[in-house]
View 1 (cartoon, rainbow over the protein chains, first blue to last red):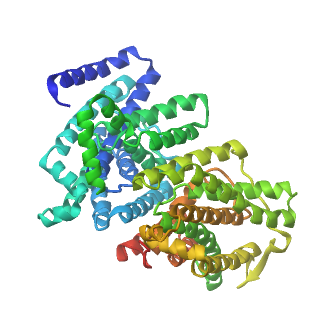
View 2: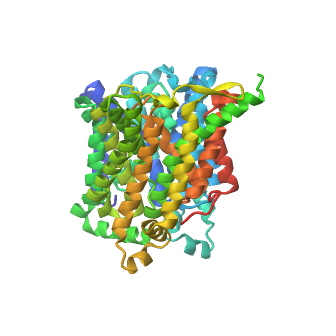
View 3: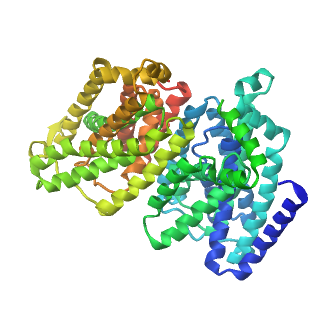
Length: 320
Length: 294
């Protein structure tokens, strides 16, 4: 994102995004807002998957925990909605600390499996606890503060939160902490040897990632006004994982592209045929065969080969 | 709530027969995981295809006992064929690629197979009947117990014995086990590893097909049955030890029995019990109960 040109393009893009809801019909505004929410979720996952090299298989749980926290505080207590909005990410981060604390004792596939089982436990509880969570019906019609009740205002709220979060995430991955995390991904043994506490760094990464997943969960409630147990189901988690791989998990902006592609595919292909997952599956297979570095990896190769070479180097190091 | 011994024992039997289905599914997944080192996300879809094709074969032969036995015989082969085509056409070109890409491929396969089932069989609920001799129920400990579940209790161990014979007494099985431990060495000995992988994948799919056909008379066959079984099979394979067949058996027993007892003691949260059991096992033995082949 270096250079004055890049910065200008970024500012232009932000201004464009702020103008969009005045021009676009309601439905498209909603879809773009949904892409923002999903993009933030995918970005937060990429902290652990792309930068941390961990098999964070059940990231959706933290998104769901936050969304349910917000929904329950608003509907069951008298506290103002803003308190709920702050409590959501904190609840997600606490869940991340608890689940991640067990997971970092393991590596690779076992890490992912333990996370799936712990996450599924939470899903099963939410799915069954009718008196509290509404079970498989979920909670609908969650009242929002007046200022967020119109779609346009919700869009602006989501956009501003997204920009702040992306800035923070960008600073985090480029901080000394982020660098250490990437070093752990590339060679955990050597990091251990030079005195880096590998597990503590991984756990910190999980807590950060789950916090931002929690922010995405809050934004989801703001946009949809409802929650349902599918938010915590493993299918959603895998879908988010796919977004990272699809967009390019070795680039900062890759997951945004992946989220945009999957959300628009589901919306627009879904309008014409009910078999949109078939088309998604076919696209994925084409991608695996022809664009293994993801969409962003491909674009970088086309337009910025020097940057690409750097990414490829990182990749081969990560695999070695 | 009064829980007498008889109902506990009956419920245990129900759990055991459920475990047998889980075992056959997770043994197939474990086998693929052990040899190919890929968690096959599409395994649940293959199980679903097994159930749906059992339904089709059953109706094609006019139902009844003949229909059922032929369905049990033919449906797994159909599933194995689907697996074979997917493996030879696409999957086998990816073995050199990194691990996550293989996982991604099986996910794509799951999406495609799920929709293909919707196109071929439609979204309606279907069901088939068990054959004449296995209909109805018999009285055990004073309460009724379906005969078909007893049949499952016989089939499960049979499958385990055949799997054991295959992996320990046949040449292909032994090569598969060797490939699970050290694939480079197997390749260096002049064995075509790609075809061994194909054999392992097809065998895994065949097992998924058997489980699908076996479960067909006990449940309503519907879209979405893949999503539920896949996560259960994953967890069973993990607590048993990745790639270990006996581990899959132990895991299935834990999963099936805790679920059955959960139904008895706290029906509302019955599905929480097996997940909690898995979590406890993984906290005590993070790498699974039995030795992993990895």
